[in-house]
Length: 332
Image (cartoon, rainbow, N blue to C red; front, side):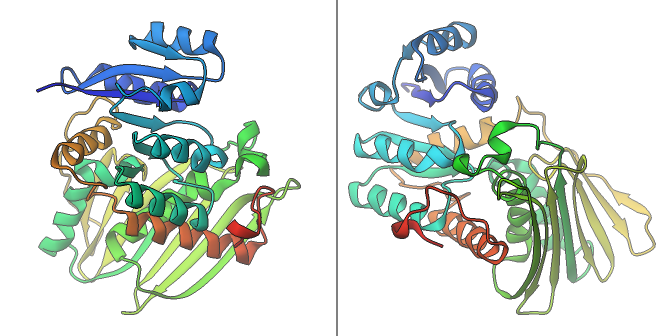
């Protein structure tokens, strides 16, 4: 069967992670093209990562009928504009998280894709990895009894990176790091949230630097989430139950899963399958969905993308974090 021709929009650091995955996937996916606003940069990237084509503009990529799937690897603030360009030209799109800068942009992008019957999904790799299902299976098996509470923290000193403290680029800890904490809670505790308490500390530029969030759910369970771009590194999650607890290392791409009994004794440590770098799973999910004629990936449906975007909007509203490009049509 003909491989999927995949192109990357943007040639920065995260594009390199995707290129690594594509180079390791063999015949299922073709590393077809890469676009940058600089032709020199696109050509250098294409040469280094063995892509067949380089584009000196995003428009040129979007107009190429040979492209089957586009991965959006630009900063958060540009996701809506870049993904919309692809959808308008009928290109299937895999958008790096955060899907957009706010829920209004997400709703409009999804509406347009559904209207035009174009595939669109969010590339939050955690949702696609086999390790996600391992934890789900452990919970379903009842290894820790009835789950009662969840904790997650993803904190990394990143405030020196320009895009992180720039509100014009939708900077801040929440969209870049905190989203993984929200995702961890959503995957294992759902979204029936009845109460939210939170505190977001802002930098002088107006973006959030450190966030503490507590969710209370309909059944009384609680999730305590923390993220920071000025402290750390800390990257771990824990689910506690009546008969023990589960710990995971690295919320974005689980590197270890451990099961403890109520006394703190290690009882199980499931093996996590080898991987290229973890990005391959979202690509393969897209390949399956495209071949099935689906318009979204079941691992990350549009409804879940909107839920997380709305959660982040509510949190930012409470903290007074508003990006300068958020016009009335996309107001919080």
